[in-house]
Amino acid sequence: MKNLWNSAIGLLLVNGALLGLTLPFGKMAGQAGVAPMLWAFVISFGAGGVLLCALLARGQRIALNAHKLRYFVVTATISYAIPNLLLLSAIPHLGAGYTGIMFTLSPVITLVLSILLGVRRPNGLGIAGIAVGFVGAAMVALTRGEAVQPAELFWVIVGLLVPVSLAAGNIYRSYDWPADAGPIELAAGSHLASAVILLTAIVTVGGGLSSFGALAGEPVLVLAQVAAASTMFAVFFRLQAVGGPVYLSQIGYVAAAVGLISGTFFLGERYQALTWIGAAIVTVGVFMTTRAQNGKA
Image (cartoon, rainbow, N blue to C red; front, side, top):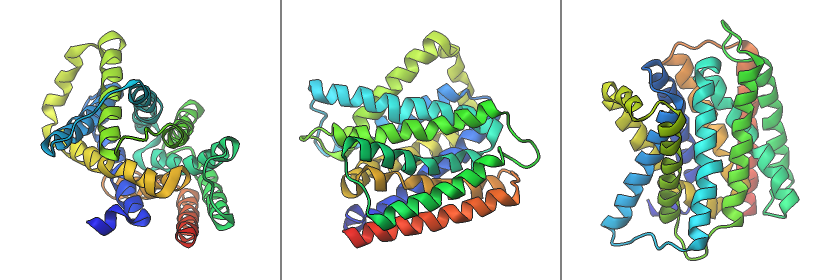
C-alpha cells in the first residue's frame, strides 16, 4: 500500500478505474429515475462524508481558514459539481462508453492551460502522447454516440464541456493548493462543499427534497457509487501531488476504457468501428505519456 501511495502509475490506474465506474453507475441511476443533479449530490456527499469520517477516526480534523474555504468552493464548483452534472446529463443521450471517452480530451486542454500559466508541463514524448490521444478522441467524437442512435449535436457539445471543466480544475488545484493541507483533508472539504452547492440547486430548481425518494429503490447502487467515489478521491489528491496536473488528467484515458468496456458488455451499448479504432489510438497515447512521466521521474 505504501508503494502504491508513492507510485504515479499505480495511483493513475486506481483513480481512472474508479472514475470509470461512475459512467455505468450513472446510466443505471438515470434508468431508475434518479435525476442527474441528485446523483451528482450522491457522489459528492458520499465521498465527502466517508473521507471526513476517516479523518476524524484518525484524530484529525479540517482546520478552516480563508484560503481553504476559497479552495474548497472553487474546486467543488469546477472539478465536481459542474462536470458531474454535465456528465450525468449527457450519459442517457450519448451512452456511458461514449461519454467516458470525452474524458480523454482533458489532458490536451490541461496542457494548453499549463503552458499558458507556466505550470509543470510534460517533455516531448509526453506532448506526443497527448497529441496521439487527441487524434483518437477526435475520431470517436465524429461518431456521435451509439451506432444505433446518433446523438444530437447539443449533447455532444455538453459532453465536450466536461473535459474543459476538468482541465480548469486540474490547473486550479495545483496553482492554489494550501501549503498546510493534506490530500484527504482537501478531498473531504471540496466534496462536502460540492454537496452543499448541489443540495442548494436541488432544493431551489431541481425538484426539491421530494426527489430524494428516487434513491430509496436503489440502495445497492447508491452504496456502490459511494464506495467507488470515496475510495477514488482518497487517492485523487495524492496523484495530483505526485504526478502534477497534466499527468493527473491521464485518468481520463483509463476511465474512458472502463466506461467503454462496461457500457458494451454490461449495458448492451453498441458503437461503430471508428469508435473502437479511436479508443485504441487513445490507449497508445496513454502508454506514451506514462512512459514519458516515468522517464522524467
